[in-house]
Image (cartoon, rainbow, N blue to C red):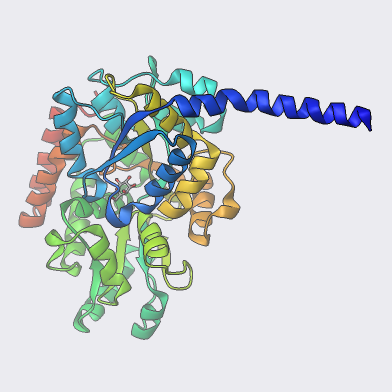
Length: 420
Ligand code: GAL
């Protein structure tokens, strides 16, 4: 009895000793933490859940959730640029893994090296080597990944397709066969939104046309943007566009997804944040209320992107930001955030039982598919290219001239030093 009492006391003392530094550190952190992202409104629930966790751990920190609405960060990235160049960085900001981070912010020496965090937190083994490579250079590791998203997914409502007697097209030939029939019945075959969502669709079409390997060759400079294969890919894109909605330019990605949900359109090609939107916001059941398939002719390819957060040099509340980054990279943070977001965890030790059937299928595909880097979501190219590509896309949407657009694209690649 006496012995077990002593044992109990020792265990209690150990628990207290272990807990004290953490509690006091949590108490010590105070002041602000400004987090900058484009996850506002119905893109917000997953981020809100993380902020909730952070507030639970650091109740004395005032979290400023600075968001600038606009899918793929079209507006946020411009605001961020002004702030960074003006010497007013937030404490931490959303940035895509890959060239958006490396070719833009690391290149201009605006980020802090986070290698120490990766070592301290055991993240060198928690994240896949390939992903660490994407957020690293020979001088450091520059952000903390929070997820892996897939860009090439085609969404539909099974009940609607059944009603219309339409099969899910596995390739663009099949799509081009069923599209006129749908259109005749007043159904938009493929819902699309504003300019960046056209580029989103475009990357799926190009990869369908040239394959993942050649797509990757474009970004390493091995293949030219004005090559005959690329002109052909633009031509295919030109054949698909007439089957999209006329008001595309004025719609957000959510509004384009809504067209499918409401039965005004048959399909939509969007990243799997659309699964987050449908399941988290719209409370639809994946596999029942909505269905998915790899965008036509891209089965076996996973067009990849990852959101991450970095620590800009001169962050006003550095300690609070580091605590934030630690939470983002943790298993708990990741498995809280991703099931709501519609993305899979970037960590290798994720608890898949917390994820819905769509996400479980995405995780399976990610493990076996060929990986291609998304352009519009910052993995493949730097900000100079992505920013100006909007004009190249605009030119094509207006002129449908494949050859001229391919030439303009190569000029832009030269200017942005792609593959150099
Ligand atoms: C992507 C981002 C996703 C999602 C999407 C729509 O660029 O990586 O997390 O927010 O834009 O806005």
